[in-house]
Length: 365
Image (cartoon, rainbow, N blue to C red; front, side, top):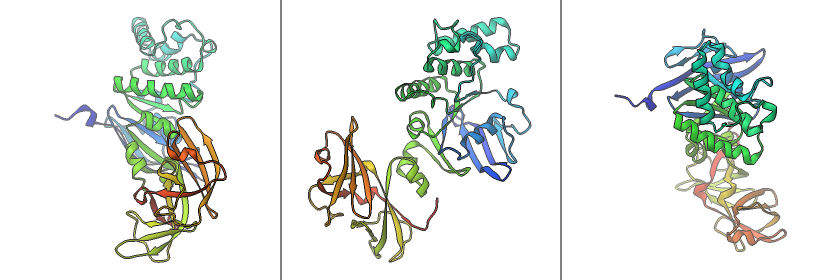
């Protein structure tokens, strides 16, 4: 007997959506398992909200199809899809109390009064809104309004929940608190969730898997660790995490491929794609994978760089290093030795080659 978690909740196959000459969603394929939490992550205008609207039924697709629990959604209107959605603006009715807003979806479904009262009380307790039942949205904080919006979506007991930048209106500390609370709550409920966000920290905190989008396409799908540690394109590499890009050239080929950066760094190319002698490449290295040294290192033997920025960031220390033709930014723990370097100091860069990524300069995402 199959585990319920292994059952497919939503399947999106070959979905395309255009607005005039704009191809907003391009041949998207996505499978979401029951109880799974998936993030659509990408910059503004990449098509993630359009794809979410197609799933919700607010937009129709030009081609392709999508199935919810094996049933095609192509001809099913939004109000019959049993999908809950929480918008960035929360879309609460200002003339309704907390209880009134939460029960709205049940009322338009003509649920019996007893059921409405029970469900409203249930989600008020679940979302810790006790004592706020009779307050209007204008009398609630941003975090409380967000909880009401989630409670309203959950009250109808949807088979799937969609969150469209639902936390972006909150300030940083409250947003991070709500990310943790939502992640715990939705896992406890076992409700299948798709969240649209441009915030990679939010995607990492909430999602089991992340679909990185650009120009209407899903470029890569995987767990947060897979997306971060094994990026499949230059776009994913640069968008997820903080990556420095150094321009360079293939200096040696043979049993070991050696790459030489224009700024003077030289290192073996780890697991690089097929490369030719003299080929121009981009070397990607994340900010946390760079260490400063007062002495030459195996990858940086001469012509030291100059510290152009040194900032205390709390748990981390951020440095910017001027290497002449390039600049690199690194983040280290404030307690590490690299924190001692000040603006104007001469320093060398130390990088573990296996922590770098080398791609042909001509390769596009």
